[in-house]
Image 1 (cartoon, rainbow, N blue to C red):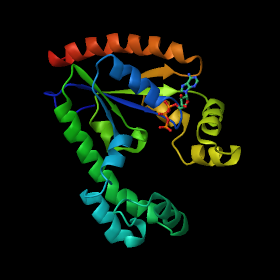
Image 2 (cartoon, rainbow, N blue to C red):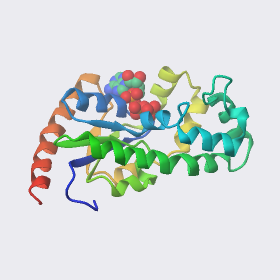
Image 3 (cartoon, rainbow, N blue to C red):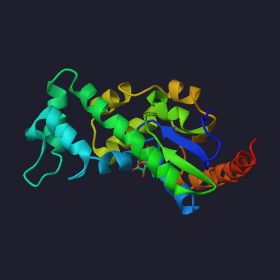
Length: 210
Ligand code: ATP
């Protein structure tokens, strides 16, 4: 669903943690498609001098800011772990700023079509901003394996991370298209190339008002 018609066709790219979103996004970028990544934006908006950092310091105190003026992620993580509702407050501060910046970057990015990476798209109002949803899908065991090998998580912590996210079924429910990422990495490039063809055609139709 979208609320405008005078913008490049927008594909929302989502998937569970370690499903392969960044890898898929890199393939689109290599084909010349503008990629806007909300995880990257989430890091940019808390850089020193950004208003979001000031809001966080006001809400959580200067203990979450390092001597050099950067966000002390470890201190913030500890606070979120220790204090009820601290995560909700942090999200209430950050999410609107991230969404606004995402919309701004998308509006400036051009392209026939754009890929907008939103890990938690099932829960995000950005669902309304994209014209189409592409889900990178793999089974839970594969996610667990990648979390343990990439991030050094234990089986238990990896399972905890997965259970805090939307389920595979919830993601697939909002999918228009699905890229399966369970096999070899080189199978991914082929699937992205096929999607690229499809999205170029959809973008043409979108420009013509269909
Ligand atoms: P996150 O949710 O943490 O941002 P992500 O969904 O962006 O992760 P990637 O970072 O692309 O996922 O991939 C997770 C890890 O799994 C990376 O180390 C990546 O190299 C590896 N990986 C992704 N796809 C495959 C594959 N098909 N075969 C083997 N390894 C893969």
